[in-house]
Length: 217
Image (cartoon, rainbow, N blue to C red):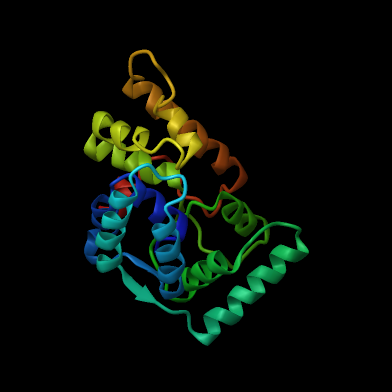
């Protein structure tokens, strides 16, 4: 399953097909909440902070056509509301979209959730069980996996073509540097540092390591 943030950023980085391939291994398919389609449609049409809006729209067309659109059941909605209440009581942030994705992850025994919402990951870790262990991955883990698959030069060009999309990734890929491009090792270290930092806050639900290849292939 994929949340809005991952979908939008991968489309902005001209990596929609790579995301589909990543989510389609092991006879699985890429899924998203149906309600997300309309929200993303609006954001894609506005294209705020995007240099190449036409490319974003093309990529979103590719991704939206490949995704299986799902809706939560009544039981999943009820459990999502319970998760949100737990988060509120624990004074952590968890919005409705993320809570529904986590509820579906549990009820349907989905193998993996890709989310760019680090606050939601930390919130789910803090509110306790029953929650799945090591079935959630963050944006930097997705990017690290693509980095291993398509190479530094291709991915750096895509990310640096849209430097405003995600500041941490632009820093990791040295998009603001006027000197020589950063080395592969520096990119790996930068991405790993973000993942390790999040893993300290969410050691149970976040997948260990930075590369998702063993999980999705």
